[in-house]
Structure formats: C-alpha cells, structure tokens
Image 1 (tube, rainbow, N blue to C red):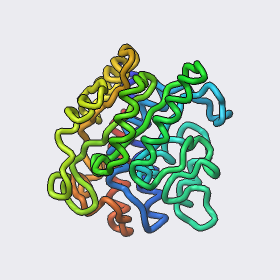
Image 2: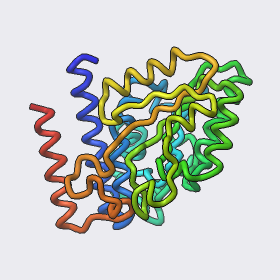
Image 3: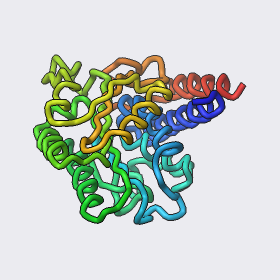
Length: 280
C-alpha cells in the first residue's frame, strides 16, 4: 500500500475514533473499548474493499457488512457518517430516545446498516445466511462480519462456523477482534475460546492471523480471502481494546462505560493530536 493511501486510511480511522468518543460521551453510555479497536479495519473495508453507495444504501449488488459484536455500534456509526450515509453531527444523538442511532445497530432505522445485531452470535449467523443467499442467487456480492473474541464463547457462533465451512462459503469473511478482554476480564479468565485460529481451521475455514491495526496486513489478508475458493475466511486480528486513547487501552473497565468531561477532554486532545500529526 502506498503511503498516501495509508495516510488517508489512518486519518479516516482517527476521525472515526473521535466520532466514537463524541457519541459515547454525549450518550453518557456505550461501549468505547471494543469500538476503538475496530476502527482501522472498518476504515479499510469501507474505503478500499467493499462495494457500497452511500446515496443508495439498499443497492442490491452491494457488499454486505454485519457487526456481529453489535455493542461496538459507535464505531460503525462513525464510519457510516464519515462515508456520507448520514450527518457526522448526528453521532452526538447516540442512544437518545428519538435517535436513529441506538445502542445496537437497527437495519430498519439506520442508513447503511445491513443487519440488526446485539444478541451475540446472531450476527455471524445472519452473515452466513446472506452469503448462502448470494450463492443461491448466483450474485457476486461478498459478506463481511466482525465478531468479538468474547462473543465467540457463544455456541451459536460455532454452529454458524460449521455450516459456513460445510457449505464452502468463499464469499464470506469473518474478522475476530482479538483484544483478549471482555466485560468481566480477560478471555482466558472468563471462558477461554483459545486457540481461535485452530478452531476455525477445524471447521474448514481459511484462517489468516494479523495485527488488526496494520493496514498493510489488513489489505494482504483480504486479498488472500478473495483468492481462496471453496472456503470461508476468518481473519483473526490482534488488537488493542481502547486503541488511540491512552487511559482506555488494554483496560476491560472501558468495555461499557462513558468518559466523564475530564476524560472526554483528554481523549479528544489525544486523538486530535494524532490527527494533526497525520495531517502534517
């Protein structure tokens, strides 16, 4: 990836992180940690990988995206807003009773959201169904989904994985946000799903392991996914929960908590400093 493209994507991801903090702070609730960790992969998907049209969110030939870890909605909303699906200013309405930006994505209310999610495990199940539907229709759109590493403790995830592998759904890519933290502690303390890669391989998936904040590795993994036939692809991406905000990084305490005013100001100062450095 050339440096200009990389810088553009890094700028986009940083702006998305600013949007995450803006939304969660104004809502006085939400999930910043796991939202901040996926901004880089969302930046790549929505700017380089996926066939989408913000002016026509329901385009039949579009690629589909399902946020299986639906509580990370602030990251998806920030991404969609930056792409022009709706005004960036509306991020401040997150979780308000009259807002179309609720705590979990709603496909009936929010432009650009392809599936309502929140109950963990159901998102990947829906994504598998979409990929199978594309096969039935001989359609060439692809389906992408992001799961949390805590989410894959759900049995439904493995039923979906088994089905996708058996049906050879090579139009499906599942990312696992491997930050090793969930609401109650580390993954291995709560209910270890490790080793993640080996489990997906056992269900007949092509598996790639990457640094989820390295755009070159994200690009390479997605190119690999497109080259593999007769197998869905799982991209296990090692990430930092709370990425970009120093006091949130690697802290399960920021899984589902909003910053106060002082914490908000510090987060925005740090992210704006990153933005300024990238723009230099």
